[in-house]
Image 1: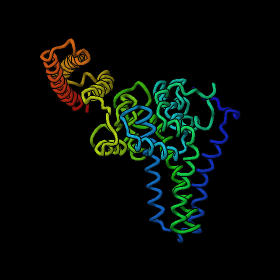
Image 2: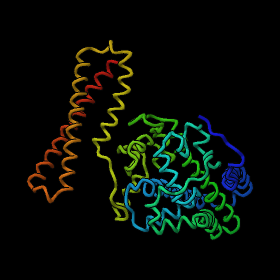
Image 3: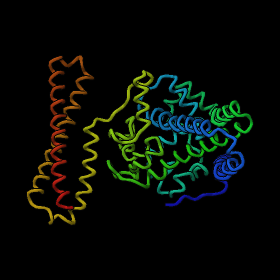
Image 4: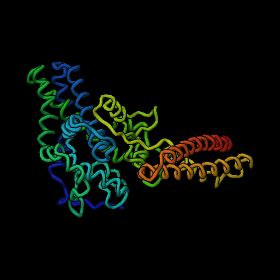
Amino acid sequence: MKFSYRLHHLRWVSAIFLIGTLLTTLIGLPVFLYHFGGQINWWLHGAVFVGMFTASGLSITLGYHRLFSHLSFKASWPVRLFTLVFGATAMENSALEWCSDHRRHHKHTDKKNDPYNINLGFFHAHIGWVLFRPVGGEVPLINVNDLKADPLIRWQHKWWGAIGIMVGFGLPTLIGWLAEGGIGALAGLLIGGVTRLVMVHHMTFFINSLCHTLGRQTYSTECTAKDSWFMALFTFGEGYHNFHHEFQHDYRNGVKPWQFDPTKWSIRALEKLGLVSSLRRVPNEVIAVAEIWEKQRRLDERLSVHRETICEKAQRLFAEAQEELAAAHETWEKSKKEYAHALRQQLDTTKEQLGELKEQMEQSVLELRQAIRDWHNAHQGIILQLA
């Protein structure tokens, strides 16, 4: 599959801006530092860079992505306003445009209507889709009508460019000027403004390109998205991309306690402060079963070649563990649906009946967890014999 780039499809403003900021960072900044590096306060401009990069980057991952695109939690107006203002400083379009593209990416992942389809090549997924208009023309914003109801989002959609320039470039320039005059203003513009912007751009672009190229498919092989702890280090935790594509409405990407996900930690901190609420979480059992099915698929591939090396007892125990897990999972799904249905129909359900259904569901959870542990033990026995 190839994407046919045509010069008349080029977004000239985007191309000039992206190439110009990149060249300024790679050439202009080193030249400036060579001549004036000894005259600026490195601690000040380093702090401004880190602060602007964090505010801008987190506003994309926490705001544009998890809050607005996926509705993974609810946020008070100060959080929405902050992420809309500093999200604009990333100069990646308005929240409405960004979320529309991202929702189409999830709906059509790796297919024709995926805006940054990795199957069209690494360049296309990384930056080509930004530089060139889609062949069929711009796509109307019909999949973000829910977001249009928010007056803050409508305001940002109208003024995002001006906000991005004034805050993204103006704020670090002003801080530098107040501290050091003209040289400080130029340093602030180059370091906290332009270089910070380029870093945020490619942090985001790498999620679309490298996170569909490098890593493991921990939970599903239905699409190209991959989990990479390494990419998580540079993307505020967005590197656990296979999990995200499998469970896109979960407010977490790094779902396990040891996984690096500053965006998740920031959302939790905001919840403690009472600024966000209704955090959406996929049940641990659902996540564990998804991971098991993927391990099962990989193991079946190995056993198709090396089954004769596994003793009959281990194979029997593993088969029993599979059956136990399948039965426990089915029971849990059934009891969960019955309890949810009873909650919706409370007028027709007595308190005693509701209590019984709740107890059955809790018991099914315990049985499923035990089945998961038994499966892992049997799986480990097979893996040891394959080693």
